[in-house]
Length: 287
Image (cartoon, rainbow, N blue to C red):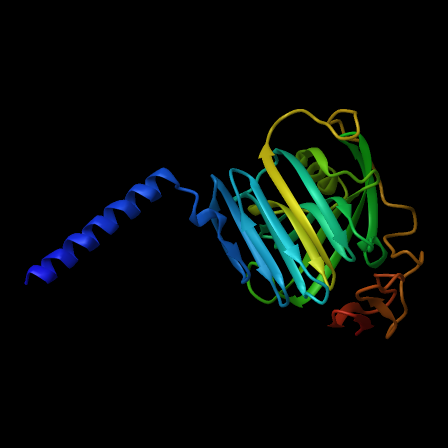
C-alpha cells in the first residue's frame, strides 16, 4: 500500500505542475499546428480552416496572428482569423504573404438569407479570378480603385452544406499586404449595384490557395486608420457597363455554350438558358 500511496502523490504532484503550467502558459494549445478542417477561437478571435486535400498546415498564434504553409499539389484551402459574426467594420491587417501560384489574400466571409460568399481581395498570386466572373462596376476605397464582380457557384460546399449561391468580389487594383479595409464601402457599393447581402456569418482575413504552394503570416485587427497606399476610406461607385452584365468576352454565351469554369476567360452569362456548372472547370448554358 505504501507504493500505491506514493504513486497517488506523484500523480497529484504532476497534475498540480500541469495546472500551474497551463495557468502560466495559457496559449500552449493555441500554437498547435492544424492540418484538417476545423473552426474555433484563439487569442480572442474566431478562426476558420478549410482544407479539401493536400499538405497544408495552419497555426494560430498570439492575438490576431496566424500562419499557414502549403506545398505544391495541395488542393483548395481557406484559412484565417476574424470574427463570428462579422460586420461592416474597418479591418486592419499586416501580412508576410509569399504565394507561388494560385492564391488570394482577402477579407472573406459569408451571409445568410441570401446565402452569399464574399471576397474583398487585397492581393493574389498568379491567377486573377476576374476572368471567370461577371463585371458589375467599381468603387474607390482606402487609396485604390476596386473592380466589382459577381459569380455563381452551383451545388458547391457552403456554410449551409452543398448549395447554389452567389459570390461577390471587390478586387483591388493596387495590390497590398497591409492596411485598413473599410468593408462598409464595399457592402454599400455592392448593394447599389443590386448585389444584396443577408445576415453576417463569419468574417476573416483569409489566405486561400489552390494547387499551389507558399507561406503566409497574417495579423488581423479591427479599426484603425487607412494605410498601405494613401487616401481615405471614401468610396465612389460606378454602374455596370451598358449592354448588360457580361464576362470578359463582352457578350453572353449562346445556348449550350460555355459560360464558366476555372481558367475560363469568356462570357459568364447566357443569352438563352441559364449557366449550369458541370464541374469546377466547365459550366454550360442549358434550358
